[in-house]
Length: 177
Image 1 (tube, one colour):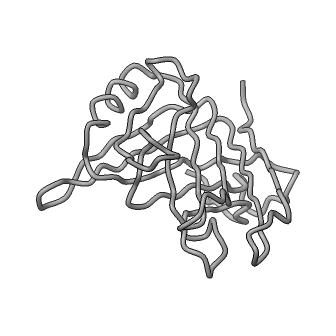
Image 2 (cartoon, helix red, strand yellow):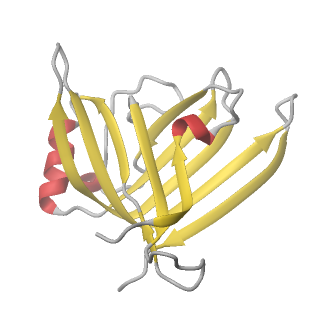
Image 3 (cartoon, helix red, strand yellow):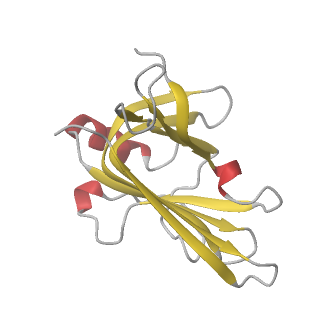
């Protein structure tokens, strides 16, 4: 694999909200997803029922050519990788991976104790590339790798009174057919 340099984008839940704010995060499939592309997680949150709560996640993108200048070389969208405790979602994920089901997955991050959304990331034309269950103890961890053709990243900012002060949206689409 080529060496990746000049990271153009990297995100993790810990960095999705301002450093001084804690965050709640959920992975969901859209309400209008077809049944074969739907996830039913075990979240009991009133706003994110049936979404997936995870123990950690990360995703990113990079320039694909060593020493390449932004805009002159291709870019590589990194996978969405997340871990959760093995639960009732595992058979669905395995079936979707083996069938090559095309998914749309949404990541929602909000300030703890509020309903203020600070980040939404959409992974479109996505497929599950890898499932790994591991660990010792009562419930093993499941690490899931998702590869997406397009990622749309939206952030909202708020002032000290929780009044929205701005919005930014960026979309990346991987090159290719």
